[in-house]
Length: 80
Image (cartoon, rainbow, N blue to C red; front, side, top):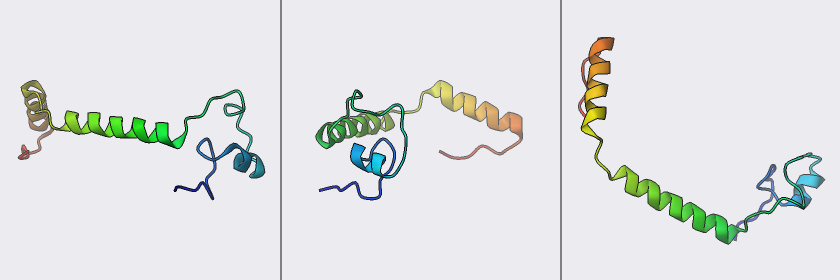
């Protein structure tokens, strides 16, 4: 279980924020908060999407643009 001790800001429970003297006009009882389960599911989905994106090959046009940039700046091209 994750505890929120020492946390401040929007991720801290409302009672701890109030106790720390931190005034946050954005957060309040009228602002909905996501529970840990929902946050975890969103994080898992974002990681899966990012991992899938990282598996995609770099488009040839981007490789060509990077090579052109390195040539114009006088740096030798690096191996990728």
